[in-house]
Length: 544
Image 1 (cartoon, rainbow, N blue to C red):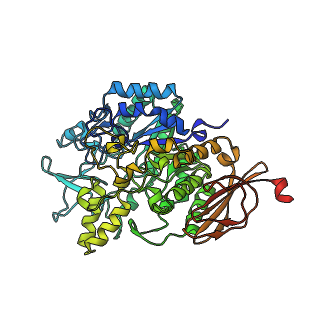
Image 2: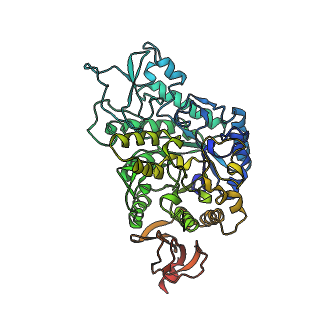
C-alpha cells in the first residue's frame, strides 16, 4: 500500500493573498476556511499553508518571531485549530511551512542572544570584525550583499544568508535542535500532517572560512548540503517525524540529482521528497532574472533526469517564489487558455506528488504593474539595485524584474469579477491583477471548458490511473517546440505529446485519445498550436 502523500494532490495557499474575511486587505485563516470546499472540489487532498506564524513581515512571514503563535493579521490560534478541524471534516490534510534556517531578529531568542554572556548567545552565529576591521568573511547572501550585519548592542556581527532581519540559527548548538524538535511536535500535536521545509539543505555551516570568489553566491560551498545537515535531518526524522503519520517536502538550494538522492531517497531516512528548480530555469542564464530562449527539448531533458533519478518527485510549476507558469512557459495572450491547459497536462502526467499553487488552476498570469515602486518583494528590489550598480538600463532592468519577480505569484486570488476580484472588501495589501474580470474562479466554475474544469479532469485522470501515478518515465521526442514522453506500468502505456509553440507541429504516435486540451478525440500525428494530447495504448495494441 502506498503512503497517502503519494496518492493525493497538494494545494498551496499563500495566506495573505488567498481570501480576506474581515475587509482589512490581508488574507486570513477564516478566509481559508471559507474556501476549503473549493479546494476539495478541485480534487486536492493536502493543503500546504505558507507561514502564518507571528512575524514582523520583513520577508512576508518567512521571518518568524514566535513559532507557537499566529500572526494577528491572519487570525488567532483558535482560528488555526478550527482550520485543522474543518479540513479534517473534508479529508484534507494540512502541512505547515517549517522555517528553521533562520528566525526573525525580533524573536525572543535573538533579542536575548545580543547580550554577549547570554545562554542564547550561541543560538546564532556571532563573530567579531577581522583584525583589519573588515567583515568576518567574504560570503554573499541570497538577497545580494554581505551576509554580515553589525549589532551595535553587542559590538559583533551576526550571520544571515537572507535578509538582515533573518539571522541564521547555529546548528552546532544541540539546544537549537532541541528547540526545533519542540516546535515540530507542537504543530504535529495540533493536527499538522507534515511540513514543507524552507531552504532545508543550508542549515549547517561547516566552517566560516572565506568562500571562493564568485559572481553568484559566495561561500556556499561551506554550507550547502553538508554532512552535518544530513545528520540533522536524520535526527529530526528519528526523534520526531517517525512518531507521526506525516511527511516532509524540502525546498532545497541549488541541488543536482545526486545531491537530491542523498536528501530524499527512502533508505536515507531524511526527507520524503524535495523541490528542485532546474525545470524552471531552462530559459534562464546565471539568475532567474536573466532570460534566454526556451527549448522544449531542454525541459524534457531536465524532467528525464529527475523522473529517472529519484524514486519519487515533488511536482510543481508554480509557488509563491516563482512567476506564473502560463506567463513563463506558456502564451498568456493569444493562447492563454490552451497553454494553461497544456501545462496542467504536463504536471499531472509526471511521476510524483503534484503541488498546485493558488490561482494556477484558473490560469492566473503575471502581474500588470508598470514600475518597481509597485512591488513589495524584497528580493526584486535588491536585484534591481544590484543591476543598477552594474549599469543595466532602467527599461531592461524593469523588463527582467517584471518577468521574474516573486510578486507575480503573490497578487490576490481572483475569485470573482467584482471589486478587488472578490478577494477583499478593503484595499488589498498588494494590487489585484487588472485581468480579474476576465480570469476568475466564479466564471470558470460555470464554464465546462474552462482551465479550472480542465484541472479537475486532469486531477481525476491521475487519481484513477496507477500508471500515471507510479509508472516508469521514458522520453520519446524532444525538439525546439515539441516534447513527448511515455508512462508505462503493467502493460499499459500513456503517451503525452506537448506543443510549446504558436505554430502547428507534427509528432507521429499512435493510441487512443484519453484527453486533449483542444477537445479532439482522434489523433492524426498533427498538433495545433499549444496543443496537448494524452494517448493510451496497451501492449497488445502496440504489437498489432
